[in-house]
Image (cartoon, rainbow over all chains, first blue to last red; front, side, top):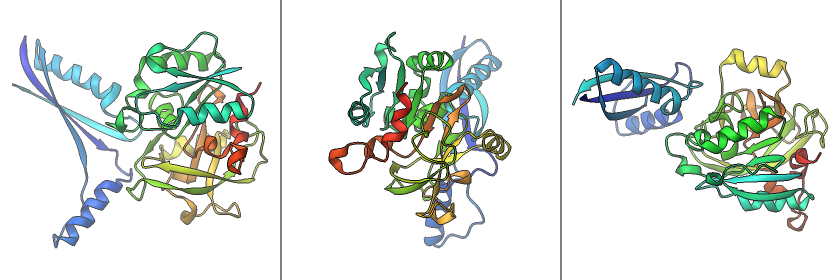
Length: 83
Length: 226
């Protein structure tokens, strides 16, 4: 078994309104920053012991499917690194 | 008819719901989620509140709690299930009902009275009203914007599964009358297993006690009457 860290990044599907991101963008603009767009995301870092990086990724994907992301509004991405 | 009002950690409309149900003569009991669904219940209400602190997404944790598997099985067998506010979020997160209730367009928590147009009066939850009738109920939520793929929503509309839409006092659906940016102003929908399962963001149980002056929400709760 090897220790891995799986990072699950959950983003809103294209076209789904992101009011928090819009509010954050407005706040940045009020501070004088110039930007074209801003998207927010949730990132989960999961430490787990697994036989291989593929195994760790598979388990993290199942976590995303079953809880971390809501398929109605979210896309997600999983990356794995050795801890 | 005994309705189980399910309490999760953070539910806060549970006792109001019991009182509102009893007001119309429906027996109701509080059921702590870890105790499981009693065998003799013939209705389930998922009350409002902030289960699991709204962590991750409102309703995400409660929607995957073991009791929800029992609720889904009961729903399959025809037991009426109503989810209100956080209960509606739990209903969608558990796939009892399609779509998702997510962050309000305003990105703020909103607590106000809204007008609702009855879109389908041929369900247990709306048969007390007429199609097109306008009722007034309160909302109190930060994540009530109904979101679903466009084609899926068109299917739901074609199948008459929208219960209520947000409208103005005259019953016209306008962007201004939509408090949270819900797609097509949807405020409540029925489940995939039939119209005995329904969820809605506005609170009928808060407009159901005669002593408080208004009882327009009673009609929704009457869906539990057999």
